[in-house]
Amino acid sequence: MNSRIEYWVKIPIGPIHPALEEPEKFIITLDGERIINVDVKLGYNLRGLEWIAMRRNYIQLMYLAERICGICSFSHNHTYTRAVEEMAGIEVPERAEYIRVIVGELERIHSHLLNLGVIGHAIGYDTVLHLSWLARERVMDILEAIGGNRVNYAMNTIGGVRRDIEEKHKRAILDMIAYYKNEIMPKIEEIFLYDPTVEARLRDAGVIPKRIAIEYSAQGPTARGSGVKKDVRYNERLGVYPDLGVKPVTPKEFTGVIKGDVFDRMVVRVGELWQSMELIERAFDQMPGGKIKTFAKDNLILLKLKKADGEGIGRYEAPRGEVIHYVRANPGKDIPSKWKAREPTFPNLFAVARALVGEQLADVPVAIASIDPCLSCTDRVAVVDARTGKREILTEKDLLRASIEKTREINPKVSARPEMVGVSCQRGDLL
Image (tube, rainbow, N blue to C red; front, side, top):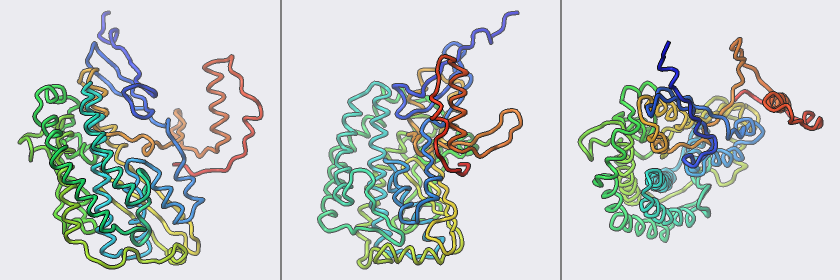
């Protein structure tokens, strides 16, 4: 009996692949060139940060949270501090809230310019990569001038910010914005909104309908590109954002239509570049004087947090979408009893995987790149017995032993040194 299944082919993309910025694996099932199934495999970048966090105090954890992701380092740091501030009832000075807006929007500009370049590279248009990444250097120089680093600038602290934005920084930022508006944005708009070749390549690729975006809880530009008006800064009236007039950006404002494809997701990022620059200018116009943090020293923060008894949730609209941090107090101790972070890439990955069904194989790299995935901040591990469905907590020793046994099963010639199995370890939580 002839059956179409005889002609199905499975193609693994990853975990190491030129089209992927970080290790991840997509098993694509094809019927000819048409995709009929996408299986996403994660776990190649697991770092155990949440387990490590349970051995760190609130201040140390703040810097650990910042290292969840380099591109969104401020976003994670900011979200974590907001969670702790809610848990302990700590108020943030108004000037610090405005500085948080300025640094957060600078990071958004940085991230969106990076992704626009990645998309250009994915479609073989490296001129776009060179243009956007050259422009990105300017904002990274600004972030270095303010915080001391191009990545992980350590601006936040619990109860405010660690550094003020001085007059020289303000002048440099406004000069940068003028440069972007006059020199970079017209070129970016011409390429991503009006270039017929780019539109022909990106239109109808990786379409995520609004219904699927909602069903899979897509976040950030991925959701807004499908017409979902969801932005934590606007919906939750976050900090001083309502005073600055922030609104969700959708493609309809620029093109008049919403298809939810790669083209629309790029349109959202272009629109958000304009919006971020406007928000920074308004923040400078409205920013009051005064203190930039509640506590003068870190030890005073820890004394306050030892008395806390409760839990807090921090939310923020990172460049890739909503970031959530949860913190639970540990009364009498300066170490939280629980910290949990949820990043936007996890739901976005499965939304775009669902959207690829029915598409062509050639659209896979650009569709995945369009959600700007960050796998280092996404990976989790849960050990489940495939036969019973039971979940277990395994130690490092258990995982190492299972890995050796699996390796021997695949290749009997491989032998592990006996002493490797006896590595000292501690029991960790199920992440």
